[in-house]
Image (tube, rainbow, N blue to C red; front, side, top):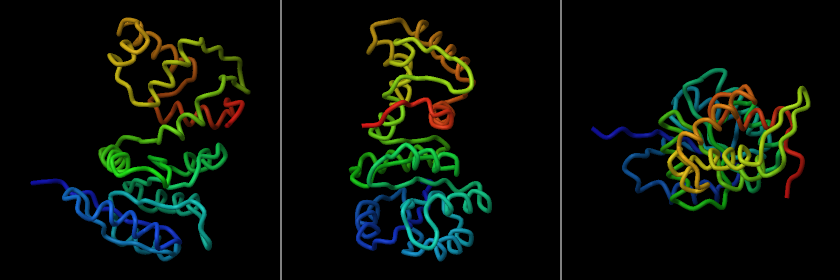
Length: 214
């Protein structure tokens, strides 16, 4: 029997909700179980309905997406949240990551990327649009609390990890062996004291190790 992902949509613009519904309605593995233009109303619905995933806008009146995410994760930790934004500002990404989102995509994303995000997050993974990952990882890495030196090769590998490249593809892209890639990965996570892509991204933001944004 096919597993169905229950989705709830929150946005103060009905046109955006209607657009998301149009993209998702005919997908057999997805069931849209609710929607709301009010974040406070949405919170009550979500805690009652317990959706698998909440797609939420960030900039909303009454309660913004950051506070909504915190409340959902506090009261329904099994519910996963994917943030929707017009752009990826470092401070906003930082706040949403701290609040507990599992994904961050731009509102101009296509159907394929949206479905990919929902699929990966519903299975316990994370998903960030390429533009969001680029904003967080494109600059040089510096630690405020202690000096951490990442080589140019390690930074290249971080960028490919953020794109969810497996070791084989990273090796092929950089013309190195998979064993070398694995060694670099271990060194990167050891140096930054993180585990997994989400932890690495959180570290980059929390420590303000990104020097510039485009």
